[in-house]
Length: 81
Image (cartoon, rainbow, N blue to C red):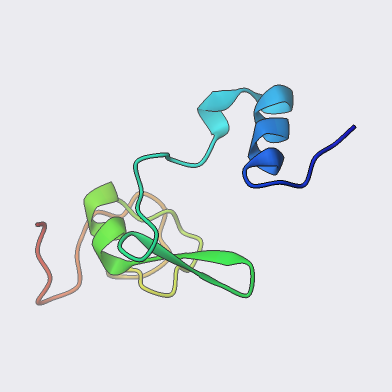
């Protein structure tokens, strides 16, 4: 039977696809992301630490130009922590 408890979906996801596709476990709610309408919204801080653009059009994308996969150029005025 499938459980809908906390993390049950990701556990099922791991069973099917393997843990290498699991969401990064060293992120902190309220610091690296926040939840909005059921979606994880990654913060600018997290995206800078990740080091590259994923091209998904993230709300807080720190890279310029935005939404260019692999881009590592930060917007003017931003720097790596």
